[in-house]
Amino acid sequence: MNLQQLRYLNEIVRRGLKISDAADALYTSQPAISKQIKLLEEELGIQIFVRNGKRISALTEPGKGLLTIAQRMLLDAENFKQFAQEFHSKDTGQLTIATTHTQARYALPPVVKQFMERYPKVKLGLHQGTPTQIAEQVLHGEADIGIATESLSLYEELVTLPCYEWHHCVITKPDHPLLAEKTLTLEAIAKYPIITYDSAFSGRGKINEAFDQAGIEPDIALTAIDSDVIKTYVELGLGIGILAEIAFIPEREQHLRMVQARHLFKPSTTRIAIRKNEYLRAYTYDFIELFAPHLTREVVTRAMNLSNSTEA
Image 1 (spheres, helix red, strand yellow):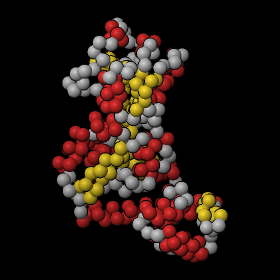
Image 2 (cartoon, one colour):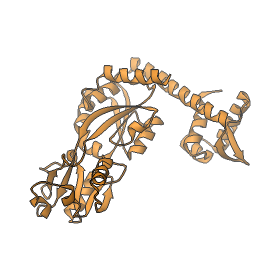
Image 3 (cartoon, helix red, strand yellow):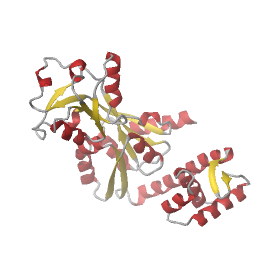
Image 4 (cartoon, one colour):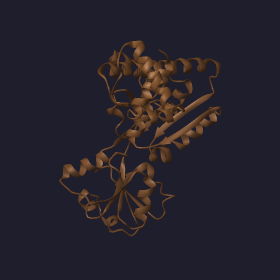
């Protein structure tokens, strides 16, 4: 048994049991992967996959258990390398952040700037995606840190920590009749087509919850995953927008107007996610603290240790 065989096993499962896709991802051939999996099964005396002819259709029950152990061993191997690198190249390495467009565009720029000034030899990568994609990237080691509002806390394999709370606002064109309302209400908002986030993004659940509790059916005319897209279509006069306050910068949005809606929608919490049992480089702790100053190395380490002891 070797780590390469475990990587093959893990990648086959990641790629929906398609050996050809796993081979492409690992820059090898399908026969090479099939051979190594067969050798692993023979060595262990266990059938890992259910096969229909040459096609893999499922993991066997023993295979599911082996996959869990294999993933833990692969993570330990990666932690082993990270631990060594911490000593011989403390300020050199790579840090990948998976996050949403809103976070990457509006919350992260000053943090990224400070981090790059502090660690010029660390290659920083930003991957944008849905909260589900973000969680999956962290789980599979494709990203070191995940930052998003929705979904992250639903994954038991992740350690998630609250970073900050934020609120929604309503945006309109400068001449929109909604601006004449003395007090913004859900009833007033519901009179107009609404442009807002896709259901998986940026506290959309809080928007749905507010309307549901009020017994109001809003006219959701258009949804998007990008705050800038929402603003663009509001500017075109296709409706009013509901978006994160952080995504509205008055000096940049001179063709739009913003009305606070803190009294209408519950606050949302942006969270940071790390894979359980992950070894974090010193600069990773620093990035987290730059983004959320209350999340010091001590706080993050305590949360990681607590999650590990709970898991045990």
